[in-house]
Amino acid sequence: MARHYVATLVDAGGVPQVGQQVQVLIAGTASLASLTDVNGASLANPVSTDSNGQYGFFVGSGVYDFKDGLGNSLQTGVQIFDLTNPGEWLTQLNFVGLVSFSAAGFSLGTTVVDERSAGVVEVGGVRVFPTISETPTPVPDGTTTVFTLAAAPNGTQLLVFRNGVLQKLVVSSPTAGQYTLATNVITLGTAPLTGDDISVTYWS
Image (cartoon, rainbow, N blue to C red; front, side, top):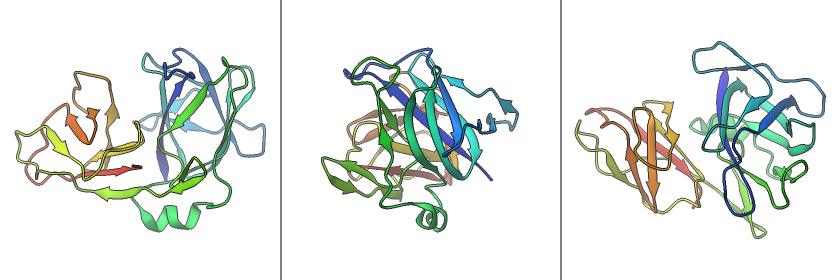
């Protein structure tokens, strides 16, 4: 089953890198992975970052390497799986081989903010485990768009799902399928209906 991957490319100052190409390869090989879009249609590989520095695609669960458009390594051993399915990510996550980062091909200090691949991240030598599928408050009622989490995510390290569909983080003025983040408050572009499932996985 194809899994959705979203990441943001930023420089040392946190400025999104716009219009940059990112190659997605089968880990340890020179073979480009087969990518698709949300409709299942074939997607070009390499992919390009958008005006927010984000890039995304669907790909089969597995391990991948990321390179820039010149073939310089960005990330290695990226494990992509479904974080909303603990039975999947607990069996696939490598707690030792965490994602490694490099800045080859970009300005000094460029890094990749990985929003989807690893269930465990390392901050200052301390491994941080995510909060899985938290239900924010209040309960959806068809009019409310603002929801509160129990803790503030670490930067933009969060995944917001509405009825199992991943929502896209934007800086302001979210529309359908989008949301904004302010400390521990998320604002959806449209109000979820009564009975809709809103779940959030994040690193705090």
